Image 1 (spheres, rainbow, N blue to C red):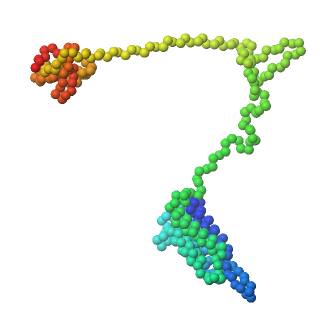
Image 2 (image 1 turned 90 degrees about the vertical axis):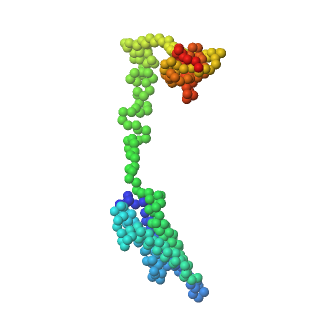
Image 3 (image 1 turned 30 degrees about the horizontal axis):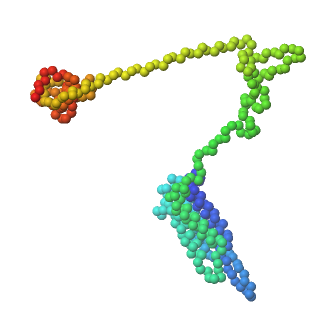
Length: 311
């Protein structure tokens, strides 16, 4: 049996079948009778022959339905094409669970006033409700379709297993060992007090001073800061000439084809061309240049005005 193919819905089916089996041993019916003014109550389980056919139609049928559903789900994709009388095993299990639920509900009715349903009868109906619901909704509800066992392995613990608390591994310095707090002394050597009447011996390096015989490194000369470079001034753009004060628009023609420059940038690329034999309207004068209007309504600057014919 492939346990990794089982889902949460299959676990609910198995749990309901186990609960149904337990309910079969609990009191299913309670009988009350009186003899010589003495009343007694007697109970019996579903395994009693007096309650036949409650055991096969309710309990055994429900357990068989759960077995068929789990058998189909445990086979995985291989059981998809296996059918019995046109139905798969899980479909047969769902149908049998619904039939067992119907039998359990109908068995609760009847019996007369002296007969009452025991705890086992109500528990059996509850188990059959869970069984039928899980069998029918297991392939449809995403929460029930989730796998019961995950293939993802558990993360391995880090560090040394079984090491005492605070142990950091070999090669590390433990608190209280020499060499942990050097305070500038090389090799962790501590200064010994001088002998009586003697001179204190210099120690090898400490508190930022070099050891005897060790050449002190001269600090590097400070680098001279370079003066900040001035940004290059942008090239001035030639301003267009101011229009003449006493100018009146007029028509003119050119003797030869001439190019029109942009109205606001005389040094720019041509925006049009004036052809001989066509009259153009001069709408503005800028120095010796004219602002001409083309037939499409656009304007351009005519720099060379020599030989033009006024209209």
